[in-house]
Image (cartoon, rainbow, N blue to C red; front, side):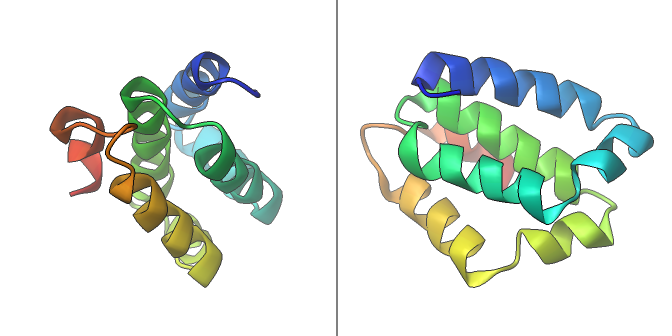
Length: 99
C-alpha cells in the first residue's frame, strides 16, 4: 500500500480480520506492526487513511497484550503522535478511536 487510498483499503481489511481473535493473533507480529507503522509514517496523509490505521491499531490492541506491547515501542508511539499532529491528515473524526 503506497497511496493514502490503498492504505485506507488495506487498513479496513486488516481491521475486519482483527475482529476475529485468531486474525488478531496473526497480525500481532513485529513484522505486521512495522508495516502498519511504516504506512502510518509515509502514506497516511488523508483523514480517511489515518482513521483506517487508527482503527487497526485499536483493533489490534483491544484485549490483546501482545498487540499492546508491540504498539508501545518508542517508534510506534512517535509515529502515532506524528500522525495525530498532522493537521492536513487528521480531523476530530479520524482520530476519535485513539482518544
